[in-house]
Image (cartoon, rainbow, N blue to C red; front, top):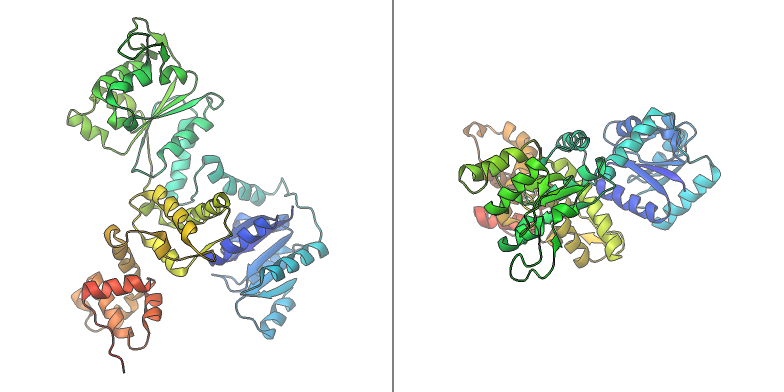
Length: 468
Protein backbone atom coordinates (compact mmCIF):
# COMPACT_ATOMS: atom_id res chain seq x y z
CA UNK A 1 0.00 0.00 0.00
CA UNK A 2 1.45 3.37 -1.03
CA UNK A 3 2.09 5.90 1.73
CA UNK A 4 1.13 9.55 1.12
CA UNK A 5 1.60 12.68 3.24
CA UNK A 6 -0.96 15.49 2.84
CA UNK A 7 0.11 19.02 3.88
CA UNK A 8 -2.95 21.31 3.84
CA UNK A 9 -4.02 23.98 6.34
CA UNK A 10 -7.72 23.98 5.39
CA UNK A 11 -9.34 21.33 7.62
CA UNK A 12 -12.29 20.68 5.30
CA UNK A 13 -10.13 20.14 2.21
CA UNK A 14 -7.60 18.08 4.14
CA UNK A 15 -10.22 15.76 5.62
CA UNK A 16 -12.06 15.33 2.31
CA UNK A 17 -8.85 14.51 0.43
CA UNK A 18 -7.67 12.15 3.17
CA UNK A 19 -11.01 10.37 3.18
CA UNK A 20 -10.99 10.03 -0.61
CA UNK A 21 -7.44 8.63 -0.70
CA UNK A 22 -8.03 6.21 2.20
CA UNK A 23 -11.04 4.86 0.29
CA UNK A 24 -8.74 4.56 -2.74
CA UNK A 25 -6.49 2.18 -0.75
CA UNK A 26 -3.70 4.59 0.18
CA UNK A 27 -2.12 4.92 3.62
CA UNK A 28 -2.38 8.58 4.66
CA UNK A 29 -0.75 10.93 7.17
CA UNK A 30 -1.65 14.60 7.29
CA UNK A 31 -0.63 17.91 8.85
CA UNK A 32 -1.26 21.64 8.40
CA UNK A 33 2.11 23.28 7.66
CA UNK A 34 5.65 22.73 6.40
CA UNK A 35 7.07 23.13 9.93
CA UNK A 36 4.67 20.49 11.26
CA UNK A 37 5.58 18.10 8.45
CA UNK A 38 9.33 18.47 9.07
CA UNK A 39 8.92 18.16 12.84
CA UNK A 40 6.63 15.12 12.96
CA UNK A 41 7.38 13.07 9.86
CA UNK A 42 10.30 11.60 7.96
CA UNK A 43 9.62 12.72 4.38
CA UNK A 44 11.75 9.91 2.97
CA UNK A 45 9.24 7.36 4.28
CA UNK A 46 6.54 8.45 1.82
CA UNK A 47 5.84 7.52 -1.78
CA UNK A 48 4.32 10.96 -2.44
CA UNK A 49 3.80 14.30 -0.72
CA UNK A 50 0.74 16.34 -1.67
CA UNK A 51 1.03 19.93 -0.46
CA UNK A 52 -0.90 23.16 -0.84
CA UNK A 53 1.20 25.98 -2.27
CA UNK A 54 0.07 28.64 0.22
CA UNK A 55 0.47 27.52 3.84
CA UNK A 56 0.93 29.27 7.17
CA UNK A 57 4.62 30.09 7.48
CA UNK A 58 6.70 28.52 4.71
CA UNK A 59 5.14 27.80 1.29
CA UNK A 60 4.54 24.21 0.25
CA UNK A 61 7.38 24.36 -2.29
CA UNK A 62 9.88 24.44 0.64
CA UNK A 63 9.13 20.74 1.11
CA UNK A 64 10.78 19.95 -2.23
CA UNK A 65 14.32 20.51 -0.99
CA UNK A 66 13.67 18.43 2.15
CA UNK A 67 11.85 15.61 0.36
CA UNK A 68 14.90 14.64 -1.76
CA UNK A 69 13.81 11.49 -3.65
CA UNK A 70 10.17 11.70 -2.59
CA UNK A 71 8.01 13.33 -5.32
CA UNK A 72 5.99 16.41 -4.36
CA UNK A 73 2.62 17.25 -5.94
CA UNK A 74 1.65 20.90 -5.44
CA UNK A 75 -1.99 21.98 -5.35
CA UNK A 76 -3.25 25.54 -5.26
CA UNK A 77 -6.40 27.60 -5.65
CA UNK A 78 -4.53 30.07 -7.81
CA UNK A 79 -4.55 28.29 -11.14
CA UNK A 80 -2.36 30.03 -13.65
CA UNK A 81 0.36 29.12 -16.12
CA UNK A 82 2.82 31.36 -14.30
CA UNK A 83 2.45 29.62 -10.93
CA UNK A 84 2.54 26.20 -12.64
CA UNK A 85 5.84 27.05 -14.33
CA UNK A 86 7.28 28.42 -11.06
CA UNK A 87 6.53 25.33 -8.96
CA UNK A 88 7.83 23.03 -11.69
CA UNK A 89 11.06 25.06 -11.84
CA UNK A 90 11.44 24.62 -8.08
CA UNK A 91 11.35 20.85 -8.53
CA UNK A 92 7.72 19.87 -8.01
CA UNK A 93 6.84 16.61 -9.76
CA UNK A 94 3.48 17.94 -10.88
CA UNK A 95 0.88 20.64 -10.27
CA UNK A 96 -2.89 20.47 -9.84
CA UNK A 97 -5.40 23.31 -9.46
CA UNK A 98 -8.15 23.46 -6.82
CA UNK A 99 -10.98 22.66 -6.91
CA UNK A 100 -9.68 19.45 -8.47
CA UNK A 101 -11.62 16.56 -9.93
CA UNK A 102 -11.24 13.35 -7.91
CA UNK A 103 -10.63 11.24 -10.98
CA UNK A 104 -7.99 13.66 -12.18
CA UNK A 105 -6.31 13.66 -8.75
CA UNK A 106 -6.29 9.86 -8.58
CA UNK A 107 -4.93 9.58 -12.12
CA UNK A 108 -2.14 12.07 -11.35
CA UNK A 109 -1.20 10.29 -8.09
CA UNK A 110 -1.04 6.87 -9.75
CA UNK A 111 1.10 8.24 -12.58
CA UNK A 112 3.57 9.84 -10.14
CA UNK A 113 3.86 6.77 -7.88
CA UNK A 114 4.24 4.44 -10.87
CA UNK A 115 6.99 6.64 -12.30
CA UNK A 116 8.77 6.89 -8.94
CA UNK A 117 8.65 3.41 -7.33
CA UNK A 118 10.18 3.09 -3.85
CA UNK A 119 9.82 0.97 -0.73
CA UNK A 120 6.90 1.93 1.45
CA UNK A 121 8.44 0.49 4.61
CA UNK A 122 9.43 3.28 7.01
CA UNK A 123 12.98 3.41 8.25
CA UNK A 124 13.01 1.83 11.70
CA UNK A 125 16.08 3.84 12.71
CA UNK A 126 14.57 7.20 11.92
CA UNK A 127 13.69 9.16 15.07
CA UNK A 128 11.17 11.27 13.21
CA UNK A 129 9.56 8.15 11.78
CA UNK A 130 9.22 6.73 15.31
CA UNK A 131 7.80 10.01 16.56
CA UNK A 132 5.23 10.00 13.77
CA UNK A 133 4.16 6.45 14.60
CA UNK A 134 3.88 7.21 18.31
CA UNK A 135 1.93 10.41 17.75
CA UNK A 136 -0.56 8.65 15.51
CA UNK A 137 -0.85 5.56 17.70
CA UNK A 138 -1.28 7.28 21.07
CA UNK A 139 -4.92 8.38 20.62
CA UNK A 140 -5.86 4.94 19.24
CA UNK A 141 -4.11 3.13 22.07
CA UNK A 142 -5.87 5.31 24.63
CA UNK A 143 -9.15 5.24 22.67
CA UNK A 144 -9.04 9.03 22.90
CA UNK A 145 -8.70 11.68 20.22
CA UNK A 146 -6.92 14.93 21.01
CA UNK A 147 -3.48 16.44 21.51
CA UNK A 148 -4.36 19.50 23.61
CA UNK A 149 -2.22 20.10 26.74
CA UNK A 150 -4.98 18.89 29.09
CA UNK A 151 -5.31 15.65 27.11
CA UNK A 152 -1.56 15.06 27.07
CA UNK A 153 -1.59 15.41 30.88
CA UNK A 154 -4.53 12.98 31.01
CA UNK A 155 -2.65 10.38 28.93
CA UNK A 156 0.37 10.64 31.23
CA UNK A 157 -1.76 10.25 34.36
CA UNK A 158 -3.55 7.20 32.94
CA UNK A 159 -0.20 5.69 31.96
CA UNK A 160 1.15 6.10 35.50
CA UNK A 161 -1.90 4.84 37.38
CA UNK A 162 -2.33 1.86 35.06
CA UNK A 163 0.92 0.29 36.30
CA UNK A 164 -0.51 -0.11 39.82
CA UNK A 165 -3.50 -1.79 41.45
CA UNK A 166 -4.52 1.44 43.19
CA UNK A 167 -8.21 2.35 43.45
CA UNK A 168 -8.99 5.17 41.00
CA UNK A 169 -11.74 7.79 41.18
CA UNK A 170 -12.58 9.39 37.81
CA UNK A 171 -14.27 12.79 38.05
CA UNK A 172 -15.92 14.77 35.28
CA UNK A 173 -19.11 16.00 33.67
CA UNK A 174 -21.44 13.68 31.79
CA UNK A 175 -20.22 12.83 28.31
CA UNK A 176 -16.51 13.52 28.94
CA UNK A 177 -15.44 9.89 28.50
CA UNK A 178 -15.12 8.56 32.05
CA UNK A 179 -15.82 4.97 31.03
CA UNK A 180 -13.34 5.33 28.17
CA UNK A 181 -10.70 6.35 30.72
CA UNK A 182 -11.58 3.39 32.94
CA UNK A 183 -11.28 0.98 30.01
CA UNK A 184 -7.96 2.52 29.03
CA UNK A 185 -6.65 2.01 32.58
CA UNK A 186 -7.74 -1.64 32.49
CA UNK A 187 -6.26 -2.32 29.04
CA UNK A 188 -2.88 -0.86 30.07
CA UNK A 189 -2.75 -2.70 33.39
CA UNK A 190 -1.40 -6.18 34.18
CA UNK A 191 -5.07 -7.27 34.42
CA UNK A 192 -5.75 -6.59 30.75
CA UNK A 193 -6.17 -10.29 29.95
CA UNK A 194 -8.89 -10.63 32.63
CA UNK A 195 -12.43 -9.28 32.65
CA UNK A 196 -13.52 -5.69 33.14
CA UNK A 197 -17.11 -5.42 34.36
CA UNK A 198 -18.90 -2.08 34.11
CA UNK A 199 -21.84 -1.20 36.35
CA UNK A 200 -23.97 1.94 36.18
CA UNK A 201 -25.06 2.42 39.79
CA UNK A 202 -27.79 4.87 38.76
CA UNK A 203 -29.43 2.30 36.47
CA UNK A 204 -30.04 -0.39 39.12
CA UNK A 205 -32.99 -0.08 41.57
CA UNK A 206 -31.95 0.51 45.19
CA UNK A 207 -33.51 -2.75 46.37
CA UNK A 208 -31.47 -4.78 43.86
CA UNK A 209 -28.08 -3.05 43.97
CA UNK A 210 -26.66 -5.19 46.81
CA UNK A 211 -27.78 -8.40 45.14
CA UNK A 212 -26.26 -7.28 41.82
CA UNK A 213 -22.91 -6.32 43.32
CA UNK A 214 -22.47 -8.95 46.03
CA UNK A 215 -24.75 -11.79 44.85
CA UNK A 216 -27.26 -13.74 46.95
CA UNK A 217 -28.05 -17.20 48.23
CA UNK A 218 -31.11 -19.16 47.26
CA UNK A 219 -34.08 -18.06 49.40
CA UNK A 220 -32.32 -14.95 50.70
CA UNK A 221 -35.39 -12.89 49.80
CA UNK A 222 -38.66 -13.24 47.90
CA UNK A 223 -37.85 -14.14 44.30
CA UNK A 224 -34.36 -15.47 45.02
CA UNK A 225 -35.03 -18.90 43.54
CA UNK A 226 -31.38 -19.73 42.92
CA UNK A 227 -27.91 -18.77 44.06
CA UNK A 228 -26.43 -15.81 42.19
CA UNK A 229 -22.81 -14.70 41.93
CA UNK A 230 -22.40 -10.92 42.30
CA UNK A 231 -20.62 -8.68 39.82
CA UNK A 232 -17.69 -8.15 42.19
CA UNK A 233 -17.07 -11.91 42.34
CA UNK A 234 -17.49 -12.13 38.57
CA UNK A 235 -14.72 -9.53 38.15
CA UNK A 236 -12.27 -11.59 40.26
CA UNK A 237 -8.77 -11.16 38.85
CA UNK A 238 -9.87 -8.20 36.73
CA UNK A 239 -11.34 -4.73 37.10
CA UNK A 240 -14.71 -3.51 38.37
CA UNK A 241 -15.87 -0.14 37.05
CA UNK A 242 -18.62 1.51 39.10
CA UNK A 243 -20.03 4.42 37.11
CA UNK A 244 -22.05 7.10 38.93
CA UNK A 245 -20.95 5.79 42.32
CA UNK A 246 -22.49 8.87 43.91
CA UNK A 247 -25.91 7.26 43.34
CA UNK A 248 -25.05 4.20 45.45
CA UNK A 249 -27.42 3.72 48.47
CA UNK A 250 -25.86 4.10 51.94
CA UNK A 251 -26.38 0.42 52.83
CA UNK A 252 -24.53 -0.70 49.73
CA UNK A 253 -21.80 1.84 50.49
CA UNK A 254 -21.09 0.12 53.82
CA UNK A 255 -20.70 -3.27 52.15
CA UNK A 256 -18.52 -1.75 49.42
CA UNK A 257 -16.25 -0.22 52.07
CA UNK A 258 -15.62 -3.67 53.59
CA UNK A 259 -14.81 -5.04 50.14
CA UNK A 260 -12.22 -2.29 49.65
CA UNK A 261 -10.68 -2.75 53.10
CA UNK A 262 -10.67 -6.56 53.35
CA UNK A 263 -10.83 -7.67 49.68
CA UNK A 264 -13.77 -9.90 50.46
CA UNK A 265 -17.52 -10.02 49.81
CA UNK A 266 -20.47 -11.73 51.44
CA UNK A 267 -23.50 -12.68 49.39
CA UNK A 268 -26.89 -11.55 50.61
CA UNK A 269 -28.27 -14.30 52.87
CA UNK A 270 -24.87 -15.96 53.42
CA UNK A 271 -22.70 -16.13 56.55
CA UNK A 272 -19.47 -16.83 54.68
CA UNK A 273 -17.10 -14.32 53.10
CA UNK A 274 -15.48 -14.86 49.73
CA UNK A 275 -11.95 -13.56 49.11
CA UNK A 276 -11.62 -11.66 45.82
CA UNK A 277 -8.83 -9.96 43.90
CA UNK A 278 -10.53 -7.07 42.12
CA UNK A 279 -9.30 -3.62 41.21
CA UNK A 280 -11.92 -0.90 41.64
CA UNK A 281 -12.27 2.07 39.31
CA UNK A 282 -15.15 4.41 40.18
CA UNK A 283 -16.55 7.45 38.41
CA UNK A 284 -19.00 10.24 39.15
CA UNK A 285 -20.10 13.64 37.87
CA UNK A 286 -21.11 14.67 41.40
CA UNK A 287 -19.08 16.33 44.18
CA UNK A 288 -18.56 13.40 46.55
CA UNK A 289 -16.86 15.52 49.19
CA UNK A 290 -19.86 17.82 49.37
CA UNK A 291 -22.23 14.83 49.47
CA UNK A 292 -20.19 13.40 52.36
CA UNK A 293 -20.46 16.68 54.27
CA UNK A 294 -24.23 16.60 53.75
CA UNK A 295 -24.46 12.99 54.99
CA UNK A 296 -25.51 11.63 51.57
CA UNK A 297 -22.27 9.71 51.01
CA UNK A 298 -20.13 7.87 53.54
CA UNK A 299 -17.10 9.97 54.42
CA UNK A 300 -14.94 6.91 55.15
CA UNK A 301 -15.80 5.46 51.74
CA UNK A 302 -15.02 8.78 50.06
CA UNK A 303 -11.50 8.83 51.52
CA UNK A 304 -11.04 5.14 50.68
CA UNK A 305 -11.93 5.89 47.04
CA UNK A 306 -9.93 9.08 46.87
CA UNK A 307 -6.53 7.42 46.54
CA UNK A 308 -5.83 8.50 42.98
CA UNK A 309 -8.13 10.81 41.04
CA UNK A 310 -8.37 11.51 37.33
CA UNK A 311 -10.25 14.61 36.20
CA UNK A 312 -11.80 14.44 32.74
CA UNK A 313 -11.71 17.88 31.03
CA UNK A 314 -14.98 19.19 29.58
CA UNK A 315 -14.96 19.79 25.83
CA UNK A 316 -15.13 23.58 26.25
CA UNK A 317 -11.70 23.46 27.92
CA UNK A 318 -10.08 21.59 25.03
CA UNK A 319 -11.46 23.50 22.04
CA UNK A 320 -8.33 22.84 20.00
CA UNK A 321 -9.41 19.17 19.88
CA UNK A 322 -12.97 19.81 18.67
CA UNK A 323 -12.30 19.71 14.93
CA UNK A 324 -10.16 16.57 15.25
CA UNK A 325 -12.93 14.90 17.23
CA UNK A 326 -15.57 16.10 14.78
CA UNK A 327 -13.66 14.76 11.78
CA UNK A 328 -13.09 11.43 13.55
CA UNK A 329 -16.79 11.09 14.40
CA UNK A 330 -17.71 12.16 10.87
CA UNK A 331 -15.54 9.44 9.36
CA UNK A 332 -16.89 6.79 11.75
CA UNK A 333 -20.50 7.81 11.13
CA UNK A 334 -20.02 7.69 7.35
CA UNK A 335 -18.56 4.19 7.64
CA UNK A 336 -21.26 2.95 10.03
CA UNK A 337 -24.15 4.43 8.07
CA UNK A 338 -22.55 3.51 4.73
CA UNK A 339 -22.72 7.11 3.47
CA UNK A 340 -20.58 8.95 0.96
CA UNK A 341 -17.78 11.12 2.46
CA UNK A 342 -19.16 14.34 3.95
CA UNK A 343 -17.63 17.66 4.97
CA UNK A 344 -18.49 20.62 7.20
CA UNK A 345 -19.44 24.01 5.82
CA UNK A 346 -17.59 27.09 7.08
CA UNK A 347 -20.58 27.99 9.26
CA UNK A 348 -20.68 24.49 10.73
CA UNK A 349 -16.97 24.68 11.56
CA UNK A 350 -17.51 27.95 13.46
CA UNK A 351 -20.50 26.46 15.29
CA UNK A 352 -18.49 23.40 16.28
CA UNK A 353 -15.63 25.53 17.56
CA UNK A 354 -17.64 28.06 19.57
CA UNK A 355 -20.64 26.11 20.88
CA UNK A 356 -20.52 25.53 24.66
CA UNK A 357 -21.07 21.72 24.42
CA UNK A 358 -22.85 21.10 27.75
CA UNK A 359 -23.15 17.42 26.79
CA UNK A 360 -19.43 17.30 25.94
CA UNK A 361 -18.00 14.65 23.58
CA UNK A 362 -21.15 12.54 23.62
CA UNK A 363 -23.24 15.52 22.46
CA UNK A 364 -20.72 16.24 19.69
CA UNK A 365 -20.86 12.65 18.42
CA UNK A 366 -24.66 12.59 18.46
CA UNK A 367 -24.90 15.94 16.66
CA UNK A 368 -22.64 14.74 13.86
CA UNK A 369 -24.54 11.47 13.43
CA UNK A 370 -27.78 13.44 13.20
CA UNK A 371 -26.24 15.75 10.58
CA UNK A 372 -25.00 12.81 8.49
CA UNK A 373 -28.50 11.32 8.41
CA UNK A 374 -30.12 14.61 7.35
CA UNK A 375 -27.51 16.06 4.99
CA UNK A 376 -27.63 15.94 1.20
CA UNK A 377 -24.63 15.84 -1.13
CA UNK A 378 -22.30 15.40 1.86
CA UNK A 379 -22.62 19.08 2.82
CA UNK A 380 -23.11 19.54 6.60
CA UNK A 381 -24.38 22.99 7.58
CA UNK A 382 -24.70 24.52 11.03
CA UNK A 383 -28.47 24.01 11.04
CA UNK A 384 -28.14 20.25 10.43
CA UNK A 385 -26.19 19.85 13.67
CA UNK A 386 -29.45 20.58 15.54
CA UNK A 387 -27.79 22.46 18.42
CA UNK A 388 -29.76 24.62 20.84
CA UNK A 389 -27.75 27.73 20.08
CA UNK A 390 -29.77 30.31 22.02
CA UNK A 391 -29.89 28.32 25.27
CA UNK A 392 -26.32 27.06 25.28
CA UNK A 393 -24.26 30.24 25.14
CA UNK A 394 -23.07 29.97 21.55
CA UNK A 395 -23.77 33.66 21.12
CA UNK A 396 -21.38 34.56 23.96
CA UNK A 397 -18.66 32.44 22.40
CA UNK A 398 -19.33 33.92 18.96
CA UNK A 399 -19.17 37.41 20.45
CA UNK A 400 -15.77 36.58 21.92
CA UNK A 401 -14.70 35.57 18.44
CA UNK A 402 -16.14 38.79 17.01
CA UNK A 403 -14.40 40.84 19.68
CA UNK A 404 -11.04 39.49 18.56
CA UNK A 405 -11.90 40.27 14.95
CA UNK A 406 -12.90 43.88 15.53
CA UNK A 407 -10.30 44.93 18.08
CA UNK A 408 -8.52 46.91 15.34
CA UNK A 409 -11.79 48.81 14.79
CA UNK A 410 -11.96 49.56 18.51
CA UNK A 411 -8.33 50.67 18.58
CA UNK A 412 -8.90 53.11 15.74
CA UNK A 413 -12.04 54.55 17.31
CA UNK A 414 -11.67 57.80 19.23
CA UNK A 415 -14.58 56.85 21.46
CA UNK A 416 -13.25 53.45 22.55
CA UNK A 417 -12.17 54.53 26.04
CA UNK A 418 -15.63 54.04 27.42
CA UNK A 419 -15.27 50.22 27.57
CA UNK A 420 -17.86 48.70 25.25
CA UNK A 421 -19.63 45.43 26.03
CA UNK A 422 -19.56 42.48 23.63
CA UNK A 423 -23.06 43.34 22.45
CA UNK A 424 -21.86 46.90 21.77
CA UNK A 425 -19.00 45.50 19.69
CA UNK A 426 -21.41 43.37 17.72
CA UNK A 427 -23.79 46.29 17.14
CA UNK A 428 -20.99 48.63 16.07
CA UNK A 429 -19.51 46.12 13.65
CA UNK A 430 -22.88 45.45 12.00
CA UNK A 431 -23.84 49.13 11.70
CA UNK A 432 -20.45 50.15 10.29
CA UNK A 433 -20.31 47.43 7.64
CA UNK A 434 -23.88 46.68 6.60
CA UNK A 435 -23.89 49.47 4.00
CA UNK A 436 -21.03 47.80 2.13
CA UNK A 437 -21.97 44.16 2.66
CA UNK A 438 -25.13 42.14 2.16
CA UNK A 439 -26.42 39.84 4.94
CA UNK A 440 -24.58 36.77 3.66
CA UNK A 441 -21.28 38.64 3.38
CA UNK A 442 -21.76 40.28 6.76
CA UNK A 443 -22.48 36.95 8.47
CA UNK A 444 -19.41 35.43 6.83
CA UNK A 445 -17.21 38.29 8.06
CA UNK A 446 -18.53 37.77 11.57
CA UNK A 447 -18.05 34.02 11.31
CA UNK A 448 -21.69 33.21 12.06
CA UNK A 449 -24.68 31.91 10.11
CA UNK A 450 -27.31 34.23 8.61
CA UNK A 451 -29.78 32.84 11.14
CA UNK A 452 -27.51 33.76 14.05
CA UNK A 453 -27.01 37.24 12.61
CA UNK A 454 -30.78 37.69 12.26
CA UNK A 455 -31.38 36.49 15.83
CA UNK A 456 -28.80 38.94 17.21
CA UNK A 457 -30.40 41.77 15.21
CA UNK A 458 -33.76 40.96 16.79
CA UNK A 459 -32.31 40.62 20.27
CA UNK A 460 -30.29 43.86 20.13
CA UNK A 461 -32.79 45.82 17.99
CA UNK A 462 -30.31 46.50 15.18
CA UNK A 463 -32.21 47.72 12.08
CA UNK A 464 -31.26 46.52 8.63
CA UNK A 465 -30.10 49.08 6.11
CA UNK A 466 -32.84 50.81 4.16
CA UNK A 467 -33.31 49.59 0.60
CA UNK A 468 -32.58 52.11 -2.14
